[in-house]
Each structure stands twice: as C-alpha cells, then as structure tokens.
Image 1 (cartoon, rainbow, N blue to C red):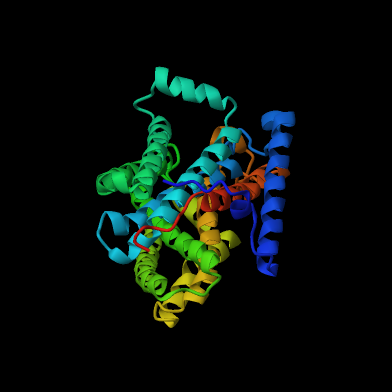
Image 2 (cartoon, one colour):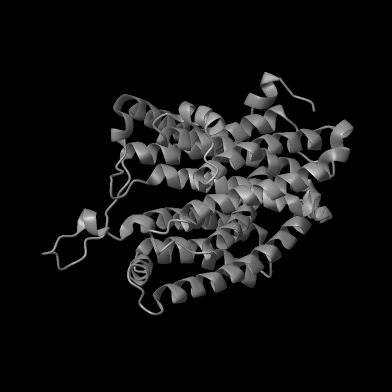
Amino acid sequence: MKINLSIKNWIGFEKTPANLTMAVLAVALLTLFLGGVVSYLIQGHGAYNVTREHPWGLLLTGYVFWAVACTGLCLVSSLGHVFGLKEFETIGKRATAGAIIFAVTAFMVIALELGHPFRIVVYNVISPGLSSAIWWMGTLYGLYLMILVIEFFCMSSEKHRHRLKLVSIIALIVGIAANTTLASVFALLVARPYINSVYFPISFILVTMIAGCFLVFLIYGSKYKLQFPPEIKTMLFKLSRILGALLLVLVFFEFWRVLTGIYGNMPERAETVLYSINQPSYWVGEILLGILIPLVVVAIGKAQAFKAMVWASLAGIIGIFFMRYNMIHNVFAYPMDTMKRSEYEVVKMWAQYSPSVTEAAIVLGSVGVAFVLYYVVDKLLRLESNHH
C-alpha cells in the first residue's frame, strides 16, 4: 500500500467554482463542528436539550446515521468481493475507506453524547455486560472497525490480496451482526410497544443497504462530476436496479409496519404510530425524500438516469436521516404516566424535544468531518481498485 505524501497532491485541487464551493462548505461545516464541541466542553451535558422524559436526542440520531452509512457501504462493497459481481469490485476500496471514515465519525459523535467516553472503553473490557444489547453493539462496531481496516489493507496489498475474500466475508458477517444489534437496542425496549418488535432489526438491514446504494451514487457522482465512464455506468445501472428493488421492499415493509401498528388499537402502540405518521417529517422526510423520489427516478429513467440518481440519492440520504431521527423521537413521544400526566389531564401531552444549537452544530458539522477525512484519505491513498 503506497502513501502519497506530496503536499501538492493532497492539498492542491483544481480551482473550479464547484471545487471552491465544496471547499468553503467543508471548512464551514468543520468550523461548525468544532464550535459545537467547544460549547459542549464549556457547558457540559447542559448544552443539549435532552430531558428525563426524552433522554435520547440529535446526537444519538447522528451516531445511528453514521453507523448505518458505514455498514451500508460495506454491504454494497460485498457484492463484488463476497458475491462475485465483477462490476462492483471497482468500488471496493472507496466503499471500504468510506465505511472506515463513517465509523470513526460515528464514534466521534457518540463520544460527545457520553458523559465519560474513555470510561466506557475501559469498563467495556473489564466489566462486560453480556446481557446488554448496548454492550454488544459497542463491542461489535469496535471489532467491525478493526476488520474494515484489515480489509482495506488486503485490498491495497497484492501480497495479501488472496486473503481478501475471507476477510470480506468476516466483515460482512460482523457488519450485519453489529447493525442488527444496534437495531435491537431499540427493538428490545419492552416498555415501549411502539418500537418493541422483531420486525425492526430486519428492516434496519434493509434501510442500511438502501443507504449504502445512495452513498455510492453520491461518492461516484462527486468523483466524476456526473460524467461517468462506461465501466462505472455499468456498475451504476446494476446498482440502480438493486436500489429500485430494495425501495419496493421497503414500501411493503412500511405499509405492514403501520397497518399492524394501528390494527386492534393497542394502547400506546397504535397511538404512537398514528402520532408518528401525522408528522410532516414522516411524509416529507421519510416517504417523499427517502423513498418516492429515488423510486420514481429509477422507474422513469429505467435505472439509467445516472445524473438524476445522484440528486435523488442526495434526497434519499437526507430521508434516511429523517427515518432515524423520527424513530428515536417517536420512541419517547408517548408520555409515561408517572412523568407527564396527572389525574386532571384530559388531553395527552406528547413529549416535546427540539435540538439545541450545540446538538445541531455537532451533528451537521460531522458531515464536514467525514468529508474532510475522506478528501485527505483519497489524496493520501490510492482508492481506485486494482480491478478498475
């Protein structure tokens, strides 16, 4: 694996209006992130708008989103190195590098949510909670990050390339285990019927794979500035068809999730489902941006409208973020009797939450962190696959 330390190579870039705009945006987002971190260090957890009634907020959404992005890229990459689809071998190094960067970004965001992030690392080893889904989630994602680094090394070294398929299979298994365990952190909340379901870990993998498809379109759309060479078009055509099929499955899943949630009018579950689907963020964020726009572009363009799919993927990845944000908020939306209701209360008071400026700065700024890390890695290391 060769590292290009030429300052001219990894700092210099073509000074086009588009590149300058991206550079300014990246610096602005990175500054926003650092400002959020400083605010947190000064104010502590009081900088966040989380409460006893709503203990999980925007930072947890950011962590889940980046974890989903990390696993999604790995799942798409596995189409080439694990399942033998030759067209997808070209994206192996870029997807794996992106997965590593997104995993690091996820850990950075969650570290700012935890009161003592270094303490959790120590006690995770010396006092494991084997019955805790959160312990398994943290352990598996830590292991997953290490395996991704090994996988990237095997992709970059001809000497160790013969080990790539085995390492990729292990990465796929651990990635799926980590992602479904992350989903189980919510699905095992027996006190919250809205989310307590065997359905949830399965749908989590589906959404993760869709997110991976969106990210591949965004990565290659940015790299080639929407001017794709023939071999990349071949890969994107197959990816579009896979994405279209996955989105149709998600529509099926979402229909039955809502129907089974409201059928029978089960206390709390039905009320929370109805509350969730009456929010604008559900119809605009999840349904329109996350599902309908990408699905329509795939259908109308017959999986060949690659430029339009890049923009649809941008809408889609924003929709994925809304899916995770709404999920976390809806878990706590229904008021627990001992917290929010009194014997004189007639109208139910749903738990309210709006992110603080610090939370918004950290999560939005984390996009800049991921972008800058990816840019540096792209310049330092050769991310084109040997099969490209």
